[in-house]
Image (cartoon, rainbow, N blue to C red):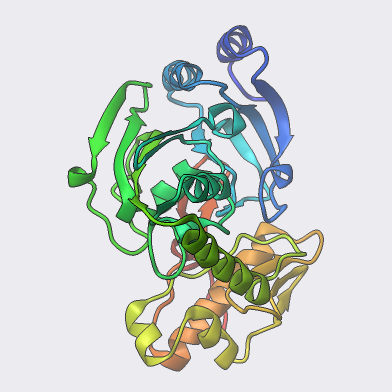
Amino acid sequence: MEFRLPLELQQRLNANFPDEITYLVPLSELSYWKIGGLAQCVIKPKSIQSLQSALAITSEFKNVPRLVIGDCSNLLFDDKGFEGVLIQIGNGLSKIEIEDDLIHCEAGAWVPEVAYHSYRKELSGIEHICGIPGRIGGLVYMNGGSQRRGILENTESVVVLSPEGVLSTIKSSDINHSYRVSPFQGKPVVIAKVTLKLEPKSRSLVRNEMRKILSSRRKKFPRKLPNCGSVFLSNPAMYDEIGPPGYAIEKAGLKGTRKGNAQLSTLHANFIVNLGGASSADVLYLIALARNTVKEKTGFSMDCEVRYVDSRGNMVQAHEYTDTLPVHT
């Protein structure tokens, strides 16, 4: 990839983030799918103030694509790479503090670690997140969880930043949400900090519930090959009539189907695994194939949990992009 960042932007980023910036980063090293071309620039802020500064500076360059990401556990990057600035929230923004029944987390806090802190402090309500890889900011953005639950059920408040880095706090009463839907999706805000409200419960009961969840995940989910977890969302109406997406895909005869080096997992059909050297086009083909075939056989449309990111930083649910491609059945 030819280096394209404006010289002025490059100079300001170098001056403000000397220890937090890297150029020409393979997205395959960031993505859980191990897929993607080169990103021109990645900034990893080490404080909320640094994050605010990164947003403020990059917002001045309107023609340069910018995207804020977490652990990329739910993202499919394009093979063409990314033609702008990625701001990655991770270990530099991962403080966790506990105050009575409240857990205050910076957006980069590791989700299983947040769950572990709740267990240690004998607090209950988020056992369902204990096996989910990723950062708490991304989990809140997706209203992610397991056991058909979402993290926003226990969210007391969220600190967000505007595109220019201005800070504000949103209380739970103003956070409308539903299954895998949050008010932050599609909005130009960046989650910086989250406060969770939990309930007291004995450590042994919390531990036992977490052990059950982790045991179930280990038995069902592919763990040895790169993947981004569940590709399709569970549709309540389809779930009641047909079953979850993995079952619907398997019943449609697609379990184990390959395109290039991507495969609908032989362990769980709602996972697409990278067998080694898979491309974004391979994964998108399988998403389209599964969505179209299940629709044809059941009448139900499966929407994606996974987000597709193009080279200009446009991020959409992957099915929104594949629906524009030639039909595969």
